[in-house]
Image (cartoon, rainbow, N blue to C red; front, side):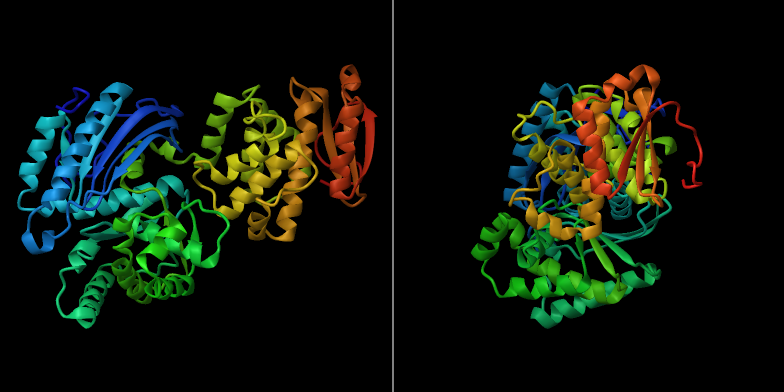
Length: 530
């Protein structure tokens, strides 16, 4: 039995949707989670995460990690590190008490390479289960690869390429595409294992090269994108940000190139541990493993030759959730689901965002799908910061987009969305703190974001019941005219403030305005323009 009183889960390596002991999504239309907990017992860290919020894009209600180092020295002794074992047990006892106080709907504990390979792994598992009352599911390497890859799929709809998950004692690779996981392999290329390789630098290089060539034989595909999962990769990416002076410190979906990574690996060699820690805030225990991780990543890039590299903050823990999701839920857009959940919880008028989106659509008939989903996200979020002080509301909107836990959106998308939301509340530019972030966007993207903000600024205040109930927009790009057709019974809504904001929108677009009372026709405009 597990901590929730459910039957024991499947044995290690069984690819079924049953890790939580019972289905999390018995209703396929369900859109929200309620405090689902996962404990991940890794070779280097022990972490408990509690998910809440939007089912397709869960938020972190609780997230605590302890760098125990269970697998440190295990390649030499064959046993779990004694100090790491004691620290892990203390952390797991704490997590068990916390879980009870949170009234979790479900709690799952999984363990990976160190526990599954150590001579005393089974004894440790028994001790943990007796001390905490929580069943520990020890998964094999291929299952670890599959779950990590599913975590990437949770955050990246349509992701295609190769997932590389590095832990303390192992490294896994898995193909992803078409929302599924393909071939997958596991290896002993974790930093703790590499510390025990004999022969100095030459011996280590020869060992890593041989293992990677073997892995390549099992994964012969062409992988244009590499997704990195794991604390050592995230630490290396944080150092890449520091070296480049990158303005946004959100780790998820941070993009690197092979050239950039090679520069950072060389840059790390020339700096002390203190310098690296001061520039990134990364713990010494984590930084100590980065040079070894770099000695794996450099030849891995040479062997698999990806063109782009992205960092994923999602891994096994999120992969366990994805495992349970029915196909109808997997098919939803994580960005839109997260924004919809925020609107439901925080907006003055939940549901207004969709009305605003529909009202503004005449301006975006030719917009590509990726732009449309950002527009929809902005409309859903346009009012979630209304409780912030008016003097800081615009900045709060910007921070919501650029710093919030929103999956399915790259860094350029975050800044675009933040700029649009900020202009929904103010029209006098950005402050110095935000200016470096705008360098991630082109001038055209900045113009479009400002235009969207001005459009939402007008549409959001035009009618509390929904702008379409009061009138409709018509856009004539060839004539350079923006027309507002007012419903006869609602024409008094077009007061001074509404007129000012409508004029501001038209000016941003470089258009003249036209206002009339009547009924807007569907389909092409009078001059045949869409």
